View (cartoon, rainbow, N blue to C red):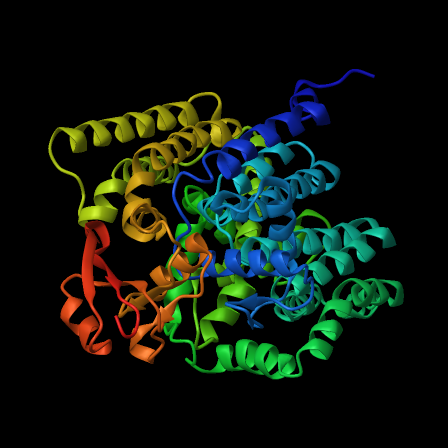
Length: 544
């Protein structure tokens, strides 16, 4: 029997070669330069410090912050960070290693699923997911979002593998990964999985699939993996159920208790940005899937069409669900985004197998978006520090480079390569954008958004590791200083004023206001951290 040219073109490539390619890209996109800028926001330093305190106490059950129980999130990220600290020492980049590892495992899992069930463009699907803005951003963050997204993605892929093969081992893997999702961020993992599977069963007109999903061995696996920590946490901390389940799950969803109020449509632009630079073709894949489903009058055959509709449901359900929530943060919909690149990989596989070429309008839009991503990365320093686009010669050079890349992409995609080159040509601006952010933008991110350089300045003038207070500074600075100085930070406006000599950080020109909080005690100006508009002072102890 002879093999046709088309069959040869789409024959699965050697696993070892593909894995080397994937590991190389993951190493660059997720791990390279993890410490180029300090921990950002309030969550990164807070989670990193919780893991450090747990490791210092050799306590694998109760998360603590400042020595007090911190029961907002489950324990999976903390366990991973504790292991990372044990291997590499405590640092900001070590705190980010767990998310980078989880993202890598997610990408490898996508590759194995596609290679087994949708061979031909399995490497494309994995690389598209790895090179997505949402994946790269959260793979470099010390947070609970990527552990949940990785576990959730691997779980739903395992469930779909069971649907297509009827091998119960895949179903048990589904329960295993959902259990880890529960350890990563709580009951949202099994809840969303159940909703997605339920809607898919309704779309397929086969509700028996829901009953078949309820596997006694699978439920046992879930309970063995997920429940021991929850039980232990409740036994150690009687307030755990109230704080974690009632406050940080139900109240966070139903009220604006934690001041993350956003409009209903908030997650639509977040999802579009998270899918960059694949947004244009991901939307085209969604539209094509909806049209095909509608053309079949909503009857859903098994196989390829079933997977496409499953991915569409997976992408939309978290976006719609969290849009209803009164509390909104970008990371909430991260578990949905891999479905977008998987849907795109299926779209590319169909069209490339038919030797189609991308439509001119879609091609130009995709390439321009990719060029804009590169241009934004080149201008990141100006955007962060000056809140405006760069001007002059640097702006011209950045614009010309981005435009040249976009034109080269259009030519490649519209030539004889077509869809087969989509993954390759789009990786070029992604790789360049990451390099620009790490090389050009990182110093600006560090100076403007991280407490690390401020903590370094304080260490240079404070050889005694004095207690530290803050006065009307952001939570981001408070938690960042707590991590980088490994101290409990006192808040002046809350009456938390150390009795002995200490340092205090306040906004520029706040010396007199600080002095009023410590009458009779000397307050000496030590220096300023201008990028964030902060001054720092030495305060004498009581009676001095």
